[in-house]
Length: 107
Length: 115
Image (cartoon, rainbow over all chains, first blue to last red; front, side):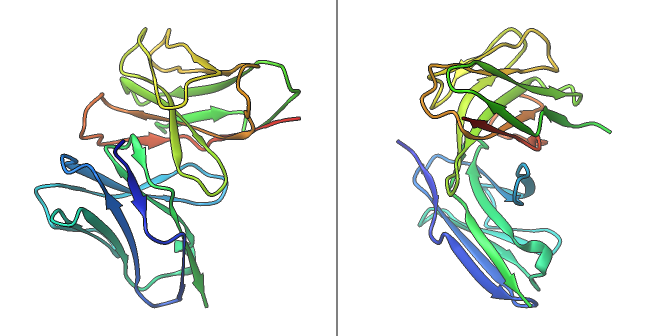
């Protein structure tokens, strides 16, 4: 079946550095993607979304890049802070979720 | 404040007992969803409802049941037929059943432990 998955289970970065979390999808017809942040014991929170007619979308300290040619999207977090420590999920249409990447921020 | 509320936050039940998890939203959303999350795994869809009095099975519906008698409520019953019920359960809602799920909102989850 179709799937959305993440490349790395854990990403460790130093405070102040930029973080890049990657995600691959297999359904070439996917036209809408969402990134979520989930802190321990809490529900996922919407971070940013992107439609397939866009290559890039920026938010506050976050940027999502979409490469439809290789069916890959990434979440970039600028100047990573301790509060960014969480599990990050990508999702196609909010019904298909990747397993998540745990972001750990060290001082 | 508008939002989606799951209760209780923690729930303990004996094996073989049915248990119902509550999900209430005051966002006037048409669509509601139930997911299960196991440690180190992504969210898996159990049931979803596009509109009141309607619901559909997701990927892992066996051992679960739902109802949608009111727009704001979408309770999930974990039955004794569910072989491995211990998990973190998340409810979500969205304004409409569409591919552009703007305003897709999650509850804070219920951690169910069956002993």
